[in-house]
Length: 427
Image 1 (cartoon, rainbow, N blue to C red):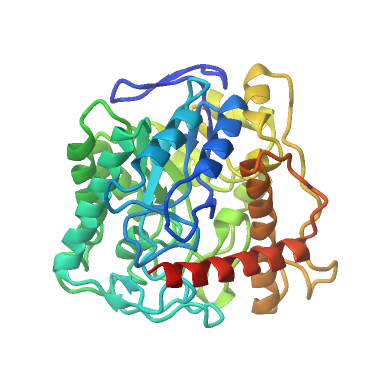
Image 2: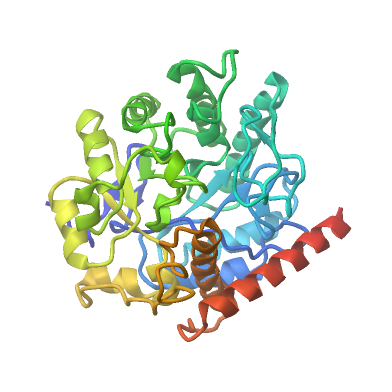
């Protein structure tokens, strides 16, 4: 059976040096020009030195008009080529892979980034008034999106990244096309699943043409949206089949949206939830491993699972059971960037647990609060706490677990507002 330290040969011929990946986490390090800089290089050099086999960047946007958050890197052309090359060189300094995650937020583009988001249809995002109602993309605009993904992928290869990952999860644009909740179109891009999956598959094909057959192309896909009437596990299994036919190199299984943030281990709005969390998933560390097992049983292809892994024993068990090929780690490497190497070497048995990250001990103040505002504040505060650790690593500083969740959220909100205003002035 494979072990964490074993290499993995991908269908395209490339080889990952071990089975541990730093999963994509949005960095927010770009300035008002939306370009990569020395902080990206410093951050990913640090993660490379920690022994990870594969690092995947956070959302790299294909269109400056629509960002997942201020601070995203945007690649529309070859501007900033040297900084991208420096980032790629630093991120592969230890002989590991660095893949660029390519993304479009669609309707999950806050008012701070754009007051006129786009999506498959006009279904709005009901989340405390932070997101404007989108308009539906035209057919010509959809073709433009496909070309933008391919252009960004080609530049990734040119600048030294060793692979790309197409982001089709977590409620971003490609996931919006996949889900019946957000895709109400009646043309060739909507209706039956084969039409709703058309955008993802066309992007995968265009990306493969842009980068060649010997360059890794991965996809991040929701196992389910966990929303009533949404993209579900049978849909995911069918899309995985189509992706296998396209000979993608690595399928990362995740799940959830902004409204149902299962990727963070939280329950979202009860009135829109499709089902409670599976009991077996609650007992296990990895949130999406049950779903990944069913997908893999139907259509075996190289698979990565991210979300919840904390102990070496659970990772080794999943590998030994042939439930996955790559273990994805996100938040644990923000507070212990050397964790992947130590896990692979067997010198540590578990990730360092973070401090208690919640606004209060009562039911009303914590992440399970029945008040949507408090639930949202806890989710955002926890995210902000990890953002502060990423910023420290990017500045060459060690993580600081003593930062409070309140201070982290306040600093994050201040930085987002400042950068949003600077982007507006930058034009």
